[in-house]
Image (cartoon, rainbow, N blue to C red):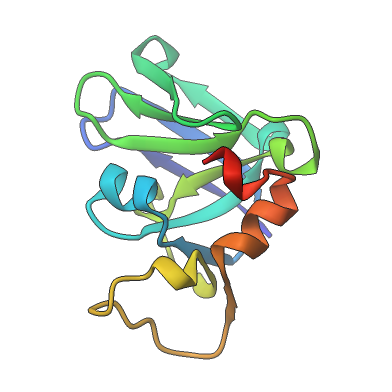
Amino acid sequence: MSERTGQCMCGAVSFTAKDVPDVFGACHCEMCRRWTGSALLAVTVPGSGLTWTGEAHIRTLQSSDWAERAWCQRCGSGLYYHVTAEGPMSEGYEIPIGLFDNLDGMSLGSEIYIDHKPEAFAFAGEHKRLTRSEILSKLGVPEENL
């Protein structure tokens, strides 16, 4: 775990994140693919360890019944995905790794929604691979609500 800094593309929003793990994940769900244009590569950071500057430029969208996404209103950079439903997963923020000023020492540790991954994507290495059902179960979200 380390402290890392980062910012959006235009620099209007920046942040310092404490307790950043060196392992990030990839999400292949349809919403993340549409939001990023690819898989979302992000690391889970405790909300209590995030300090933002330029907060007036942050916009959010409740993108599902259980989560929101945020972006910079000036440049459109995606800033975070956050579970808003009560529970332990609501304590963290998924910060896209491309926002960090330095990615040294970081590695891929998991892929989620692996059963929704486009055939053209192939991330190398041994890491966890979880299906949509496995992730929704962790969130306590019944699949029929989607």
